[in-house]
Image (tube, rainbow, N blue to C red; front, side, top):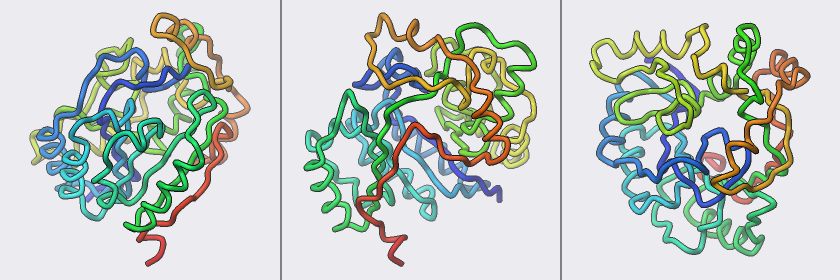
Length: 287
């Protein structure tokens, strides 16, 4: 069995916020919802050869999915020993039902200056999470790292960005979508400007373990990497854009070589752009 830090599934590709620099390209992605049956099939197949520590439900904004409870149920059934986490911007909390809260281990709420979630909402959510044994994690973002360069990267730059990309390596942000595993969110089909980069088909399962290991441990950058800053882009204050201006405003980044050097020393180095808080501890923490 392969041991892996995480696998991700985009519950939806779109978002109700327009954050400049979003590395999922959610503000300009088409409206799309993960198919529950496909998620069940894909993760059941992957469970035969891989044991991820985390399964992360991301977006876009996951709470836009009308069948999120069923999607989470499929993931819990397929990978019962993984830590199941939902990442949300929190703006829909209190507006949609959360029957799935007891079925996950962690709920992370990312709070942005332009879409602040009230502390009263978070306190009510913390009480609900504590009641069902789910950890509530709050990350306050005041800046992002630019994900799109102002110009295509050269060969040497592309390799350096790829080598230090936390999405592709340390943080294991590998996306499972419609029968394939993609190395990172920017290379998944929902990302804009995506090249025909390689992915790992889940079928045939008889050779999946070998193929997946080779794919995830590749040392060659994707073609997409020349148009991506990975996790070493220059910091930009958090702002919102419109659909018309998002690409322009999000494509002004450069390489932050000081941060790249820090990641070479510690690939799991925290990104300075967020402040993390624990509002409720989950059942795993209390065991």
